[in-house]
Image (cartoon, rainbow, N blue to C red; front, top):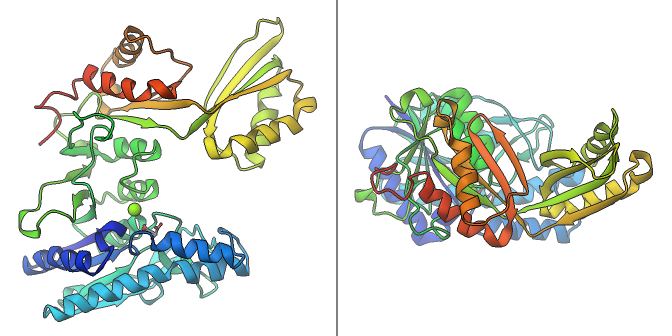
Length: 420
Ligand code: ASP
Ligand code: MG
């Protein structure tokens, strides 16, 4: 019998009315003869509420001590509630259904409370229950740590629970239901011409997710790619009997016509730092980035350029806005050791990225980006690239406009591409 995993996020289970709508989607698949596991998030806003309570009680996560253990027991409770409510609704519709908490499966994690990683899923019992015609309703976001206590997987972790479960039970696909009907070429709130993408590769989705496209947790995409679990992003707000096709996320070999650029993604959470007049000699960059790494500050988009003063260089990088103050403190503390002259920072920057598999095989993708921005008078402060991505750092005020003109320049406004 073919098994599928369906995952519903917080807005999809926000109240009893929404949970009933979810049950209607689930029964459609069960009636079609699938062995079904459903992974649910907590009701929208519930995890935030629980996190705030923990903070009030003196347990900021992630804490790798006794406080982290209790934090996890509190925040995991949101999913315990929704999984059992959905099982109840399904039972009342005449279906056999039961809830599974992470420890009951068991879904085993490592010891990193608050941001645990999945170590192993014993899928035998749950797989047998599914094939026996019982709908398995699984509490997402949680598992059991080696100490026998509940562990949570980090915010947004239910996506990862769903993909890992799909891999463990050998599901033919994992359907991720959310409040949008798929993955878009760009944020529809910024560009009216944004279009739903019919198919996108794991690799592209991974870049887009880590660039801040909020549809899927980055780790869930990594896991789907590693285990080749096809994903579909769908809306639970569509009528169950008129479900749209959503967006399929799959192996690049399964995409016949690859887009040169699939998405244009803005990220407004970046800030830039420039370190002026660093002595141009071996070991200085190492000193800077080791100090930042030791403080657990993530950095991106590094550029070194010649300083006006001979024998010195300027080094710029970006970090998340929330980490900027800490980055500046760490660098100031190291000023004498590193030997730079001064620091500058800018919060009013945005990173705009274009992602597309076709870049691997097509020349000129970068020049379109630079020429389009130049024609509109948008200055580029910083550039970074990967095999399938080009990012530029620009003034935050120009970012929305940049997204729209790039969307058009890469042919994404066009009705026939890449929508379905
Ligand atoms: N409820 C958790 C959160 O809000 C997990 C999830 O929704 O994926 O982060
Ligand atoms: Mg989510």
